[in-house]
Image 1 (cartoon, one colour):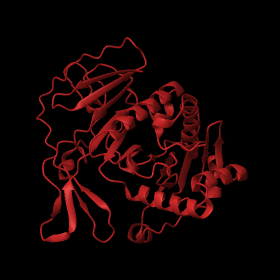
Image 2 (cartoon, rainbow, N blue to C red; image 1 turned 30 degrees about the vertical axis):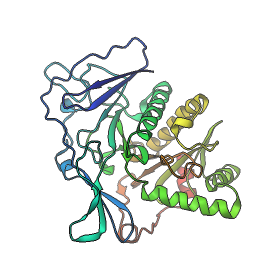
Image 3 (cartoon, rainbow, N blue to C red; image 1 turned 90 degrees about the vertical axis):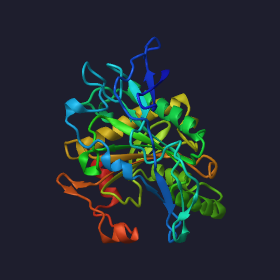
Image 4 (cartoon, rainbow, N blue to C red; image 1 turned 90 degrees about the horizontal axis):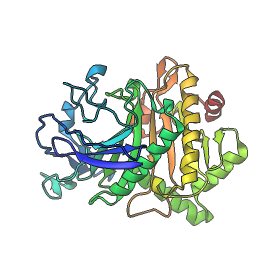
Length: 357
């Protein structure tokens, strides 16, 4: 893919990824935007040890604009958007309302009067990834060739953010559907460069380390082998990937897509693995949308290795889950889930897998 980096009117970076090698990206951002002045902060909860991002400026971010005002569509005469060009294949740009960003002033310290609560500028990076210029499309409607292009873009951005000062973990994800909390309907995802290792990843690394010490093998590798041998929860078993409903699924719809080879991140995938992922993923997304005969709201979350720790213990995989427990009912995180982190699923993983098959 051809990669062209430009700047928006407020100094944010925008990168075009084009399948056509001769594509020219020269359009200027004609908007009058104030320079970026990110002020996000992070504070560590003294009771759990987890970092919390605080980004009050995000309250003013764009919220459910009409289609003709979509900021992720290409620019048209008299209506400039976040993408200055009149068309594009795949585009990535720095979020205008970032939770984490470079250049935040200040130094690490503590919350005033609370010496047990460390605080620091939330220096990292947040990017938006637009998968297509077609406002009315979806990831599942993309061609396998375009999905393969998106995988290459994720790899490009993961490598770049891994090398960004202060970034400790890169998270590529997609939120789809208003039920999930999506405020822009244009097909897009996001990439976060966190300045710390996320709590979920830290837990998974600890469990993998303990499992390896006891068994001498990787827990994900053993899970993958057992799921493939059983087949009861398997949806797709391709040459390089297996998609299955995990045996301890939390959500009413939940799927993991796991490569057969242990790799730390998307960057490490071979061309063959990337090609195979594209068709496997589209197969899974098609099943999700046919489940209730309508577009299924979901979160698709890539689990990648942190930048500087636990890379030998990590096993790249994609996790998809939905809050829809029936065609017209939502799964709410009630007292047990929200208060104690103890999940109660209203369906067995085997039932979920059977329905998706």
